[in-house]
Image (cartoon, rainbow, N blue to C red):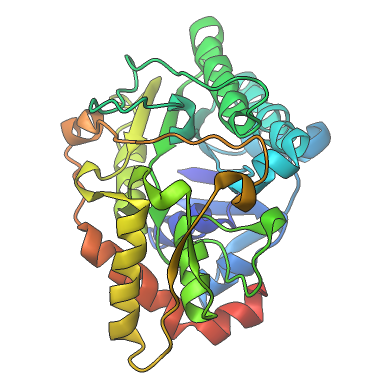
Length: 346
């Protein structure tokens, strides 16, 4: 296949691109604003990259889609700090700009693999039930809780893609990632900043490396299922290789066996850091209010537990347990600290 990947130089994109490019049966072309993570992931191996913005209805997007068999759209703003501090930018990219890709796929009748988010499920309300793609209600907070603007934009695009399938025969798969972690997730952050705070794993990793307290928002009571990036990539490959079974489906990708609280995650990372960096100072774990950490307008989901029956039905299951997932992810950051800072900055 000829595969076009938009947003290819992000965390998921760089890892997926590296995996797909090793299969000589596919021609993989990569598009993003810049390529620093791709250069790190591929190291000295060759890859096809073109700097590209999908904003403002860029006509080049239409040309690329017309030349492709499969279109993978990973373009998104995903950092929680942006949801509160730059909400209009979040909506612009995650909804309006990505519609450029969707509409090109409709025009040229191309298969679309689009990245949604587990955030669309919204509030769990303490439910012990896993999120099921075709049955779970998508319940968000009030308009004044700005955190939900990301989820709302992604959910509306999910619904529009589904409608294009119903009305125009668009072939698509919507994937909903559940807390992927691993090499090249975000970057180190030397100084705590409300405006540019990485996601929780990278945030804790930065705190450990730079010896500042690991901050638990509202006590770290929320629960998440952390999925190693190699498991995520193998799930995506299984979806790509099952076009009929996965056509016009919404698919969770995650590891329900890896559920843990954010507090327990912090304690687990401290234990692994002591083993990876014996003798290094280990910072304290402290509680902070969400309004202090993120600002006013933040609200959280207390639990995100995926049902992964659809993936199991095509023969996929996650391989990496929580302990190995966290150890592998941390080891990469520890052993590549200087290289990552030199390439991605702080």
